[in-house]
Every structure is written in C-alpha cells, then in structure tokens.
Image (cartoon, rainbow, N blue to C red; front, top):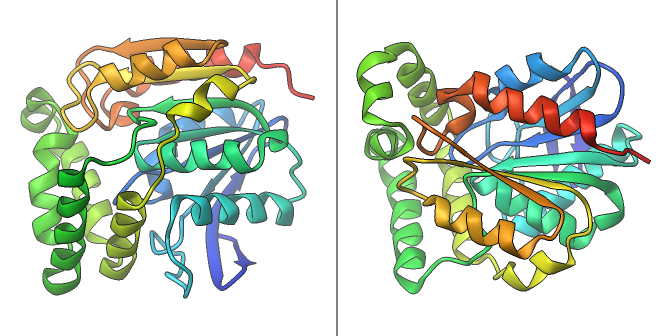
Length: 266
C-alpha cells in the first residue's frame, strides 16, 4: 500500500478508482480494511481514498496528540498530497467524530457527509473516565482484553453466533492495533468537543445511518443529528449493531451508492 509523509508520520492509505472522490474514515480500534466492501462498491465510478489514521493499521503513532481535529488535519493533508480538492467524507463511530471535525475546519473541501453509528455529543464525565481506564488497560495489557470486551457490543447476537468469519475479522483488526495508538485515540475521544451547535451549519447533503441494535451509540443520537442538519437523510438498518457497514454490507452499500450518485460535486 502507498504511504505519504503527513506532518510527523508516514500515513498508509488505499487510493483506488477514478472519478469524484470519496474518503472513508475508520472507527476505533480498527483500520482501513473496515471499509473494504465499500471500496469495492464504489471504485467503478469514484476515486476512493481510505487512510489508516495515526496509530492504526500501518500508520505510525507519531508525536502529536491523536485528537479529532488532528486526525482531521491528517486527512486534509493526505487529500492535499493526492491533489484532491473536494470529497465526500464518510466516517463510522470515531471516524464520524473525525468527519465532523473535518467539516468544521475545512467545509470548502466537503461535497457531502456520511455519518454512520456516531454522534455529535461529547463524552459524559463517566464516559471520559472509562476512556482513560481503557487507555491504561491498552498500554498495560495489550488489545486482547479490549477486543474481547468490545466484540459483544459491536455486533448483534445473531452475527456473533452465525458469522464466525466476520467475528474473527473484526477481532483480528482490533488485535493488530498498536496499543499506543489505541490509548492515544481513547484520550482524544475523551477530550473531544461538543459538535451539536455545529450541526445546523452543515450546508452539504448528509446521509446518517444507524444500526437498529447498536448498544454503543443508540440510534437516537443519529436521529438528533438528522433533525439538526437540514439537508440530511436518516436510515436505520435492521439486524445490525455498531459495525453496520460489515454486518449488513449490502443494505449499507445500497444506501451509499444511492447517496453518491445524487451528490452534486463541484
């Protein structure tokens, strides 16, 4: 896979297809392979860019804090490197936090937003404490315990029992995450700002997707984003929890393809 020098890191990324640009931003604690099914669905008519965020996949942790604005600047700098002026930015979970931060800082670079299983609100005080505890656990114990505790929350019970290959794929992604990268991202998520006041300022089309059985970020958060963003569509996908793009890839891709074909790129 290609790499680019982005500030203090070598960033690994996928760059496939040609046409209007679509950027996918993965969640925690995953990497760019989270989006493989979506890359395959779009590359016939679009240029698809999928970075490994700093500290994830094959990208270095670096020396800068892994805040949501820093992740967004890394993505913007990658687009500069690739000479991409405008793109549809798609984020799931933490990737959604990054997508919102990207739009706040670089709205002129965004043709549309896809926000999947994410939210605009910051962590509660209890949530922040939990993030810090998880960061310490990642550094002292590695990723296995985190992976095993997260898996039942990421997927529906039906998926866990009937799709062992998918369960293994997701667990393997988490196990491959650098504990230092995971810890840095957890602290960055704990420190993220409240983006709810920014939502009414969104002037580009937005597709907001939620898994009906998501226990980590219940779909009510997605519905509130939809209510705040004027030009948005809200879709709930059945038989899916947090990793909706993998649990129900066909349904997710149908919504994605319909959305990108309707966008008016500059």
